[in-house]
Length: 278
Image 1 (spheres, rainbow, N blue to C red):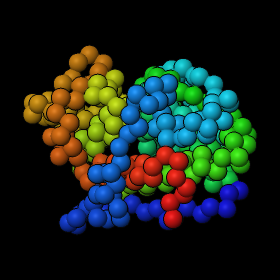
Image 2: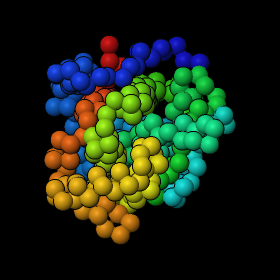
Image 3: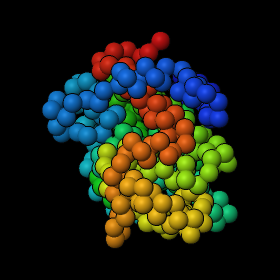
């Protein structure tokens, strides 16, 4: 069990003015957070790993194992022991709550994040199902090996905590979004967040999938996507969807997109090599 207690995470209602101010420091974080230049770390794309110092990355790297992520591959199942942490390099993983034959997606995880970080709060069993929805690759490490590395390099734990706080915020905000915002806003927000998580504008997504993860009628999803296409925001091709006008699509999204993006940006504020933020 860790001695670090997470701050209370709550969803943000964006019905008022100044939605970015609801998440303290978000505006500054969005301006200051700059991804690690690829030229400095050409061998790793995962943002959490890329922020580690050479010494920290070397310690973690000794225990990392490359993994090919195949579509529908299960990385975690509810009530099962958390054995590995997966640092995503490419592709997209859906984090879900599954109960009584139904499913609710609470977050999407791409190259900015990791799967299996619930062990940080002292839990030994997974509470979510983690499923690969868009194929790609990852590096995985056994939980016991990561614990050992974090004892020697506590900064690794700090980076993970910062990411997990952003992920937790996304999970909570998704729940609020599902009951407060209408279909067009939610679809636009999901597409923007998925695009950012993959660092790509072409998404191999179907109407059926969007309908299932967002809990919307398929006919409504089709109608909204047709409207987006007519407005020049997206282009639908066989089996894929291409975002042609990201800025205008963001304007159609609910505030949840900006709030979640801001939460991830805040997790990147602290420069490499510094101690924990006070």
